[in-house]
Image: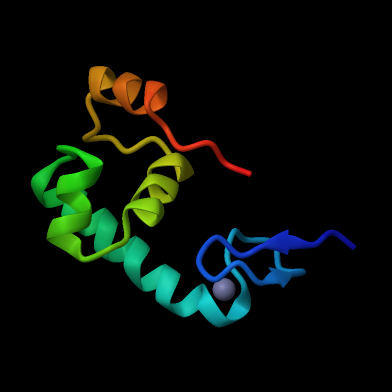
Length: 88
Ligand SMILES: [Zn+2]
């Protein structure tokens, strides 16, 4: 069995996601907030998205890494990759 570290609270858990079962509801909620914000406003910067949505920057970074977001410009994505958070 593999232990994963929760990206939100740091607790170790055996779930398959990045977050522990305790944080999953809030994480899903923030992820949908994030997605709907991006679909309406597009992606500007991690700073801006975090401020506008109230989602912590480290979570915005994580959501960005989950999947390619259609409205994300290629150039912005490259910028993000260069300055991206190192995942442990
Ligand atoms: Zn957690």
